[in-house]
Structures are given as structure tokens and as C-alpha cells.
Image (tube, one colour):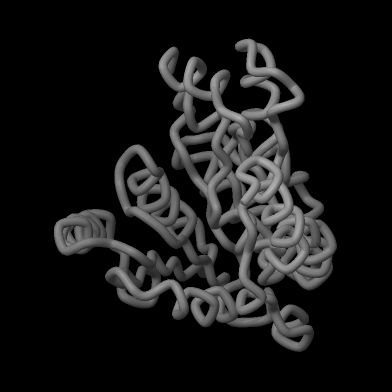
Length: 246
């Protein structure tokens, strides 16, 4: 960490991707004049369609999607165990995990059997090209962002959070600053503590209020405007040009 602060202090331009990271760099002596907050830009391919957003929460099951590495420290077991608790409590859910490698797929299959999760409750997809991610998001009611509360992850917001919002997906987010800086509980998403019981309780609350998901979807889109690459690109290129003239 110390080396990263020293390096940042010597650069002409440092572009943190979130407010927490920006504040942390300032606190560690990086000159404000060299800092410019630039969000991770999301492609227009992620933009959801109005009709699809209006359908969120109207199916027989609550459709959940998670994209990214399917690892323990990224909430794999919290999601699987929380899903099992919710299903046992009578909450009809289906979770789709997108991005698992072969070992992660085997682990999830074995754990699903142990927890009594059927194919109707859990689908695990291998790694796919980034261009295919939007179609998985369009099928879902909510997108999941979940991380252990590790020091670095308090400063580095996940790209998927912004992709979900642009796609009009309310975000089901674990309680860590890099999620809660952007997700307001009950508005453009839902916040839960990082444990299976809290995850399951959040699903129960959402199912009871599923008629509100279309409104939450619209609010997700409204909160996503500043994360679209089309708006970020001109300023990004201008900053690079200023830092590296010629």
C-alpha cells in the first residue's frame, strides 16, 4: 500500500474510480491538483430496455444474477447458503452465477447438492465474453454485489455495480462503503450484512415488495447516468492529453 501512495504522489495524473479512493489518496498526501475522479465507464450495450425493466419482479421466481469471480472471499458461500435459507423459507428464487472457472463450477455443484438446491434454484455459468453479459442482466430482477469487508475493497468499487445500474437492475449489495456509496437501501437497490441469514432476510423482504421492483429499476437507471462511458470518454481523453501532451 505504501508503495502505491508513493507512486501516486509522483505521477502527473491519478484517476481514482470512486469517492472513497479519491479521499484516501488525498489523506495520504497525493496533491489535489494531480487527482481527478473518473468513474469506470459502462458501455451503452448494458442499457436496459424500458419494457424489460417494467417486467422485473413479475415472474414466478425472483431472478438473481451475479457476474464475476465465484470465490469464497467474493461471497460465494454467503450467496449459496443464503439462497438455501430463503428457498427453505418458501421464497421462490433462482440465482445465476456467471463467470465461474471449472473448479468453481465443481465446488458450486457439490455445495448445491449438500444444501438441497435444485437446478431451478441455482444455475452456474462458466466464463463468457463480456459482450454476452448484458443478456444475462436483462433476464434478471436484481444484480448481486457482494464482497468481504477487506481494506482495499473499501476503496475500489466493482465495475459490475455500475453495469447493473446502467442495465436498470436494482442492486442487492453487501454492506461495504464501495457499495453503499452508490446504493440506497430500498431505492435503487437493497443492502444486507455479509452473512447468509441477512442475505436470505433481504430476499424475503424483496419478495414481499416485488411489485416495487419496476420502480427500483427506474431509479437504478436514473442513478446511473454519470457512469456511462459516452459521458466519461471526452473528459478522460482530455485529461490524458493534458498529462501527456504530444
